[in-house]
Image (cartoon, rainbow, N blue to C red; front, side, top):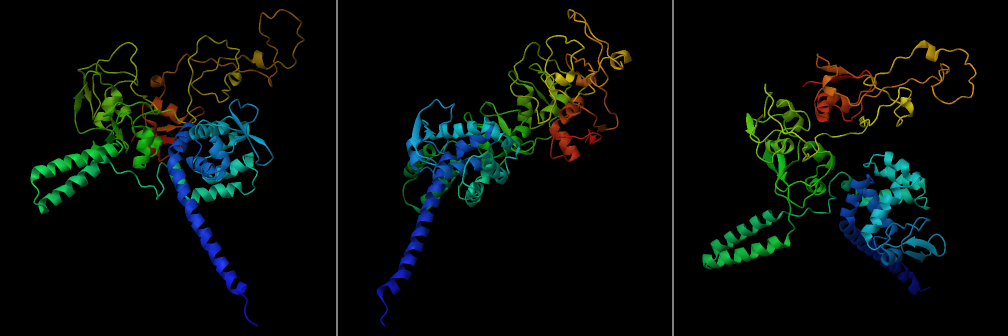
Length: 497
C-alpha cells in the first residue's frame, strides 16, 4: 500500500509548530527585557519607598499585564490587575476577568499604576505580614502574596519566582544590574576613546592638523551632548573610594552605578536618610577612616562638621570626639580642628539654633527614642499603658511604693463619693507600679564601664550603648563582629578598639 501524504505532512507540521513556539518565545523574551528596562527605575523607587522588593514588583507587572501588551494594560495603564474596590474614586473600566464585567482601576500613567500597587499592599491589613520579610527573600514574598490572596491562580507564586529567576530580577533588590543590562559608559570615557582614535588617524593621515582639530571638537561635542551626565570615576580621599556628587544625582543612582547598597551609602557617609547634597560634595563608596594623616584643618566660612568629615574622609563621630564636640555643635569659622587625635581645649562653637546640613546620627531598628515630655506626669500613670512602653529601662527610676499600697489582703468596700483622692485599695495582683519619666536623658553622665567592655542589661539597645560611650553604631558592630543591631541580656560588648 502506498504511503499517504499525511504520513509525511504530520512530522513537518510538528516541526513547524516547534519552530514557531521557539520564535514566539524569543520574541516574548525580547519584549520582556524591553519592559524591564523601561520600568525598572520606577520599581526601584517604589522599593526604596516601601521595602517591597523591586524584583517582585517587576515580576508581577510582567505577569499581570503580559509585559504591557494585555488589553487591560493598554486601555487602562493598569499593570497589576487591581480591581476597583469600595474605596476607589478614580476612573473605572469594565472587563471580564475572573467574572463578567468586573471593575478595574484606570490610571493616567503606568507609573501611577506602580505607585498604587505599592499603596495597595502597604495599607491593607492582610498584606501586613509581607513587610516582616527580608526584601532580599523574593521566594517568601511570592508565596506570601499568594497566601494573602493577591491572585487566584494556585501556581501564582511559582510563576512569579520563575520570572524573577529567568530574568535575574533579584539583582535590583541588591542594588545591582542583571547581566543583560549594560551600564552606561561615562561621557569622559567616550571622549578619551574618540580623542585617541582621532590622534591615531591623524598620525596616519596627510590632512593638516588644524582640520583634524576641528573634526575632533565637533565629534566630541556631538558625543557629549548625546550621553547623559554621570558621576566621575571613583577617586581616593584619605585612602578610601569616593566620588563627587552632581546637582541632580541621588544616592539610589549612585547605588546602582557602583553596586553599593543605599543602606551602606548612608552608613559610609554619616547620613540618616537621603536628602539633597550640594554638587561637588564627596560621597564615599567605602567606610571612612577614623583619622587623617593631616594633623589639623581650619574651619572655613560656611563649613560644618559633616562637610569637613566628608572633605577629609574621616568619620563624623570620630571628628567630634577628637575635638570634644557634642553631636550638633558646630565650630566657628577660623577655629582649628584636630584630624588625628584628641585636643586639650575645645574649639569655640556657634551659638543659637544652627540648622544641620546633614543628619548626625543613624537611628536603627529596635532603637529606643524618648520623646520630650511636655508636662509633668503624675506618679500614678502606669508605664505599661503609656505608648505601650512595657519594656522599662534602668534609666527610668521608679518612685518608691510602700507595702501598704500593694499588700492589702482584703479590699474594703468603697462608698460612692467624688473622685478627689486616688484609691489605695488595690490587690498585689492588680497593683500599678508608677514610673517617673525624666525630661531628658544625659547619656554623657551615665555610669560607664572602665575596663573597655559593657555588659548588656535590661533596656539597653545598641543605639543607647553607642550614645553612652560616644561611639558610632558601625564601630560597635565592627568591634563585636555583629551583623545585626540587636543585643541580648548579659551580652558582653567591646566598647574600645
